[in-house]
Amino acid sequence: MLIFDALKQAWREGYSFAALRADLVAGMTVGVVAIPLGMALAIAIGVPPQHGLYTVIVAGLLAALFGGSRFNISGPTAAFVVILLPITQQYGLSGLMLATLMSGLILLLMGVLRLGQLVAYVPYPVTTGFTAGIGLVIAFLQLKDLLGLQVSGNPIHFPEKVMAFGCALPSVNWADAGVGVATIAVFIGWSRLKQRIPAHVVALVAGTVAALALNQSDRLHVALLGERFQYQIGDLIGQGIPQVLPSLMLPWQETPITTELVVALLPAAFTIALLGCIESLLCAVVADGMTGTKHNPNGELVGQGLANLVVPFFGGIPATAAIARTATNIRAGAFSPVSAIVHALFVLAAMLLLAPVLAYIPMSALAGLLIMVAWNMSEAPHFVHTMKVAPRRDVAVLLVCFSLTVVFDMVIAVAVGLLLSGILFIQRMASLTSVTVVAQTHPHLDFGEDVVVYDINGPLFFAASEKALSVIGRLPQPPRALVLDFTDVTTMDITAIRALDMALARAGDYPVYLLGVAAHVERKLAAAGVLAATQVQLYSSPQSLREHLSTKRHNVAPQESTPSVVSMYTAG
Image 1 (cartoon, rainbow, N blue to C red):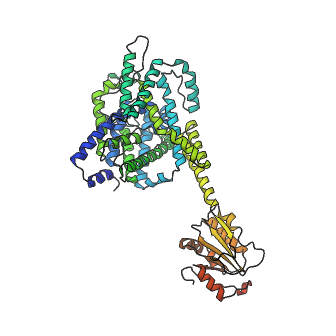
Image 2: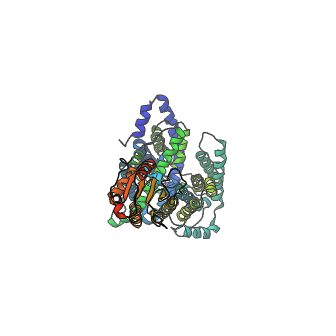
Image 3: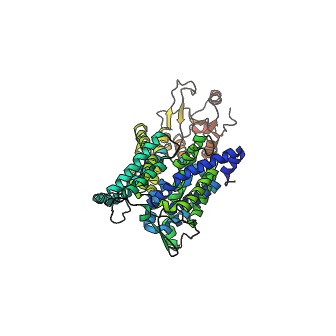
């Protein structure tokens, strides 16, 4: 059963009052961190901040309840910013919520089809490259609010944003910049103290206090969240965040669903699902390493899929597990998914009780907070270290993914990165395959001076077989027999089988002995009809073949060749 897996695992270990108390403390701790991050990430993708909190509340609760990881904390994450911002700019909030719903369905299907292990097939340079690229883009996008820039227009592509931000530099608001830089400084300084109170909270409180103090001046003004965002409930128009429960709504109530819209959003939905899959499963792996537990990858995908399927009906945006919040949850002493449920309920209570207070948070402080999240997410020191120690081909893949993520988007970066990694993998595997003529002095494969032995090493597949097997049969003088040592051949594809068939044709009527053929390779050769050739025989060991050759002398003439095919399981 793919739902409630994490809850059942915690219950089997024995859920006590002490575990409940630990979950309550951890849930409230990570909830304090989730409030500013939820709002900041919603703002970063171009929607009002309450939609980020709705996501924390609904998706965070559902992913914990149904998921397969005991410690994952789900909600909006920085990795989604570069994907979701263009969707919001082009299709609005309704289009974004529809894409969220579609991605949830894809994630759910991935879990049901048990595709949770697929994330292991994404090469490390690809994930490192696009993660670092996402971090750079997020940090750059925060410069607008961090510096209080007045940017004209609404550029979508990164090069256009760079030019627009550069043109807007003369409009820097030094009060906003001062608060933003102070928030970053407090975050870095507090993080080094290793205190239990999260640096996000201390930095945001410090930035808010500084902004309120500066706003007492007639000459300086720091932009606040309540000034930037408004909400309307009936005839009531308020500032900042509405002090109400997330209400049921239809994602398509503003933009009717059409076939054209679904087709247009489908690539984005697949991208959201792919990134959500990678992020949540990597987060679960990190959590397992910190706690010594074992998550259920397919159950986690089902939980994330259900969360993203439901959250748009409550005004939410895409969600996945967040590594930073999950690590905070673990360090705070969490025992089970109950801590994630508590974190969602804590954010709900804070939203209902503290919404008017949240309106006084400065936009530049939220931007500074996201810059630090982007820095930690990008793992810049590790990125540089990888470039120094990794093989040059892997470095090339990493830089290509990084550059394409920054200049274009993650979809192109991942697609090209996987393609390049696949090509490089094929080249590496092909270089491992060789066919060499064994010297007569080799004691293991010495069958006499008039027997030519080819030692075949490595997998025989389309990239290696043609070149490797082309040497077979090209002999300066006729031998008594040919021996092909298949002991080190792990696999063959149809291209290799065809190349072997052609090599046997070049060998003419000489007796050919295939030595040490693996069972699965023998079945392929038999199915392709290669073993039906009259001159081909199979032997399981050099000793059995040596005994056969010593008791029977073969001539090159076709009428004297042995017509039978002997299986490796019966020969000798």
